[in-house]
Figure 1 (cartoon, protein in one colour):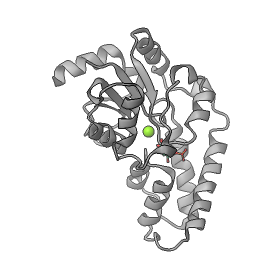
Figure 2 (tube, protein in one colour; figure 1 turned 90 degrees about the vertical axis):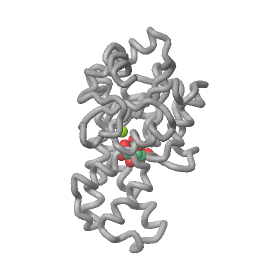
Figure 3 (cartoon, protein in one colour; figure 1 turned 180 degrees about the horizontal axis):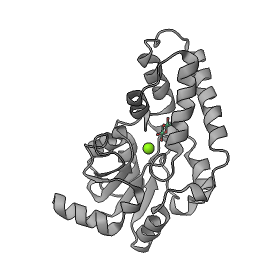
Figure 4 (tube, helix red, strand yellow; figure 1 turned 120 degrees about the vertical axis):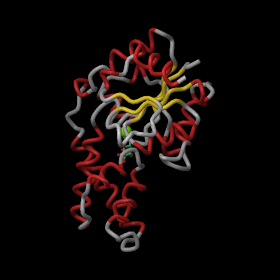
Length: 221
Ligand code: BG6
Ligand code: MG
């Protein structure tokens, strides 16, 4: 039986995924790396330093910079990102998410956040969602980022649940791979081709309801 839900943040709860993309795009331009849709999609869910490495690799520049320079690039991207999210409020929560969270709480499901972002605590504050997410996996304490399952394994542990009792929710292929690798049920929100590995997929957040999830799980069973 499903007892808990483990949420990704960027691209699932709010469209900060767009701002991450914009900030990386700007840095890629500055580094002379061609920005493509494949690169943009591949970066979704990936940690800050791993994202920078992916961008450098895409431009065959992975050996061109020192560790200090790389840290400066990542800090610059984060400064841009923080400017982009500066004006966010609870109106930036994706439609259907508040109702879904309320429904989960009403049915006593356990909930936690498994975002790769070190900015997720401030975003939860801005969105006024701290009350729903008292439990947040700290990505700085993990050895490996998504697509490694570690963050979803840790999420289940923090909820005191077995992986098979958890559903993970993601907008990115790397995140779905992490959920599946952890032995949890995966829900993908977004594009069917990008999220083909998801156990259940919804085109948009408003489709993600307990009724629709239960129906999809019956079909898959
Ligand atoms: C993930 C985003 O949630 O967090 C990625 O999908 C981002 O785009 C990653 O790179 C790390 O975020 P941050 O805020 O710690 O740089
Ligand atoms: Mg995401």
